[in-house]
Image (tube, protein in one colour):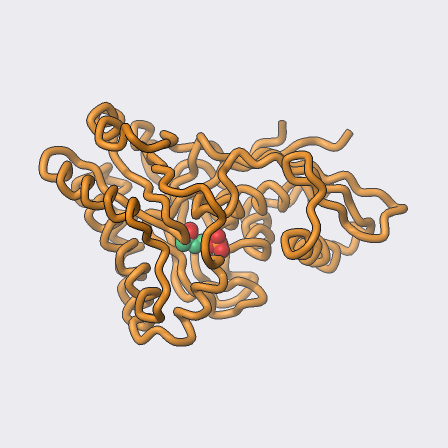
Length: 314
Ligand code: PMV
């Protein structure tokens, strides 16, 4: 039996939005993430010499079409990069993340697949991060636990993530508020490409994001939620503003409702929001404020996450 690899998903307080190189997923900016203990993918890869192509089961269902092709393309890269791997494989993945609703399912999925497909090679984390990036940009960060920086780099060699060297911040919480669990209107890849190609705000986003990355790392190291929170919120809004300038948005009425509630509660306690490529809202706070925050969103489904671990072979 092939071993199962678990990768936790991650949410970025400072976002990745836009690729300089589409093929290799080299981003225009660095980004900062928190790995989440509540969302993960469990994946195993079984190589078989008699298979003509890779087969992919997600949550027990055989997958065809675009999702299969994306996995096959990734596996082709694995075989081209590591010629000792020649066979096709049966890939089985269980996703404990609502898929494609802006809750970063591809991050845990491709991080787990990077490790599970190369178990026999015992690659370094740096190498796994590069490899995971080929499947999904955000996956490069899910190799590690806690807080992570994806160094944008300029090419395949130099673009990978590393853990942020800091004291653990175990009582930080990320709460995913599920506004809508349906598949999002457009993929992050599609939306970011349009932003890069056409948004007049994109150069401003890139310039500001590099500053946000450095500041966020400083505030993380100091455990200063009062400084980190407003920055995280502004960073997400700047990302969405760059997209809105090309006539696209992920906001739904309930997205804005949650944002407004958070803004009001912010006058009393440190709670801040961030959003990704979907309508769901993620709140950042500390454990001691959790009860008040959960009261605020009691009429929604939500999942509370703390800092999670890096890759694990189960
Ligand atoms: O790696 P992707 O294609 O899932 O893109 C992720 C983009 C955002 O979630 C919006 C931001 C981020 O840094 O995770």
